[in-house]
Length: 262
Image (cartoon, rainbow, N blue to C red; front, side):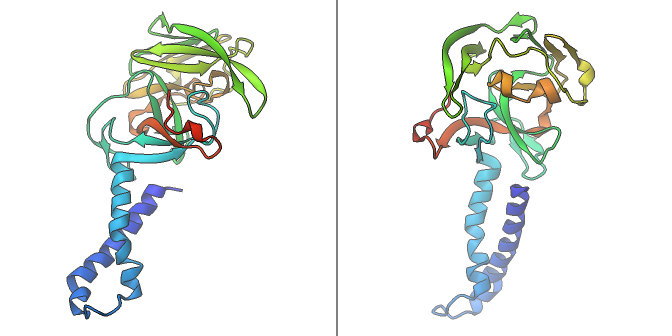
């Protein structure tokens, strides 16, 4: 469901009704008379829909985390806010950038339109910028030939499934984050798609090495062994970017999650 398109259609319909009422019918009505239904249920919603449309299209958009691919940073059931303007102002529905502001940085948690099905929104962490060479070999990540330094910390407890995963802390640029990576899980990347620019990637028995094309980004989930990401389906084009995730505003199963984002 393209909610942005639905919202735009509602905005146009209620806007037309609002304009017709203000410019013509409101002047003809008695001040004490009741508004007709088409005004009360049509034109009357225009200001509310306009505010929601502006907020959601250009400022902040809410999303719900449906899977565990970003554990431990984001948990299933987290409701997050995404900054829609930090990477530039885009026209709603067509997602065309009209004003440049900032570029994604390594370590950012970014929402984007899934390249294989742009009707779906995905969320992963940016690890490769345009021109970078990203290697995921023997379960270690390196960028432009430099291994990303990590530090092992206490194992992560998947309470809902009653098992533990090895947990680490990594730092990319100024961003420090936790991720999961089990040493006994296979390093091989099975079932990679035939994605655009696949010739930029070399797959082997211990992982994958990719050269990120201009205007694209390489994304990986923090739950390294349970994330289908750029290692499998390739690069995210700049035009697919939705925004930068920055805040957990609700999790009905765990209220302590509110405000967390590390």
